[in-house]
Image (cartoon, rainbow, N blue to C red; front, side):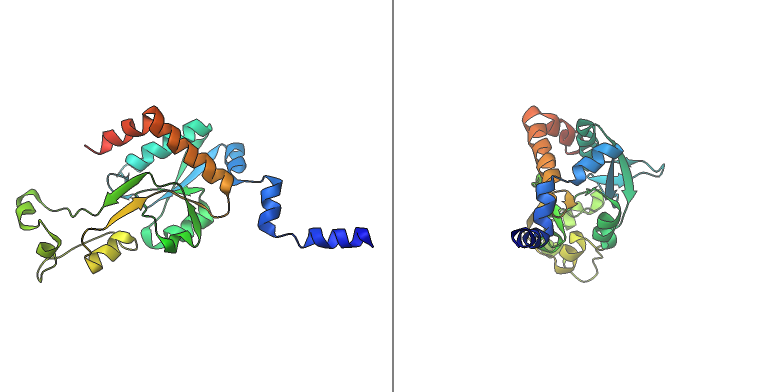
Length: 206
């Protein structure tokens, strides 16, 4: 009877607790495969941009390449889009990068790394028009056309034209995998402490 009760207790153990006790993590799978699969829309300079030759460049691209090197694996880039970013990430990738804003909605289905940057929204126009658009009120007028990458926080911002909003940026990670999150957070910490973060971001933010 005691053995039967003991078996029933074990069988009712929550899956998340069982996973934590087993020590299983996507981190182990990445190291074993030798590949870090990275989703990115590739349309948001200076964070991530898909060049005409098919290669990616940008601040986040250099950072994720550096993290993969520290992990001892290669990066496998996966093209995504803002409207399908979360689905693509869950289905195909280990991490998603490219100027991704931290939101509670995204937190419902994924983990974030510790934020690596606080960034406001900056409108871009031709040099000859810069004097005309100095405030949100200058932009929020009839006859002014605003374009943005669809499906992300920039689209919501453009539609609402909110002033003075700064947002945190981070990478998306699989929900429920504290080992992978801990490794990525520690990598960011050491990259900032050792100067690699400043060297990489300084190349793109001048």
